[in-house]
Amino acid sequence: MNAIACRVLALLVAASPALAQAPTPAEAAVLQRARAFIAQGDCPAATARPAAPPAVFTDATVREATYHRILVEGCGRRSQRNYLALVLPDGSGRLVETLAGTTVTDPVLQRDAMQAAVAAARVAAPNCPQVRPGSADLEGTDSEPTATRRTRPWAETWVFEACGALVAVPMRFTPSAAGGTGFTASGGRRLN
Image 1 (cartoon, rainbow, N blue to C red):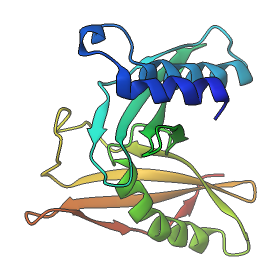
Image 2 (cartoon, helix red, strand yellow):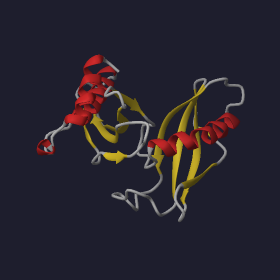
Image 3 (cartoon, rainbow, N blue to C red):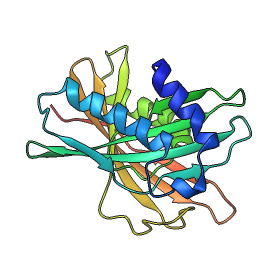
Image 4 (cartoon, one colour):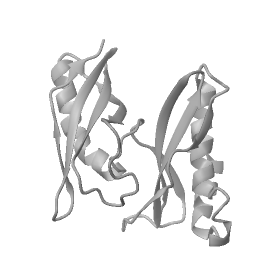
């Protein structure tokens, strides 16, 4: 992350509640990152805007963490970019891009499920030494769009790039009444 975005994120801690209607420094930073993504593409007329209000996460290893979903639209296309904005204990900021797409998994669940998803993708591309995550999309519609903790099972398709091939991995997530969410990754299939 560049020094300006880092300083902007550090200001997140000092942001006044009175400025709640204006974009927060973290929101401004993720929009800046999404616009940089647009600038690299073939549609400079595309726009970026929040797809949902930021979700706040509590984690003892950081001062503050917010998850931002940014909708990118233009040239007849639409995609979603997702970012985790962190303010570390020393006050420095970090912006991490997570899985793109309409996934409703939070960054921690994405991290936890990634190993199983990559293993399933490798089955469809056994000779590829490097499998990279691409996007993750919710299957169907979100039955709990404002939930802070999901209570119903859901399915997503995670797509990976494997040596030029695109591999889709069906993922199933099942929240537990005791807390946490279980997941399974089914066998991957090549899309091209």
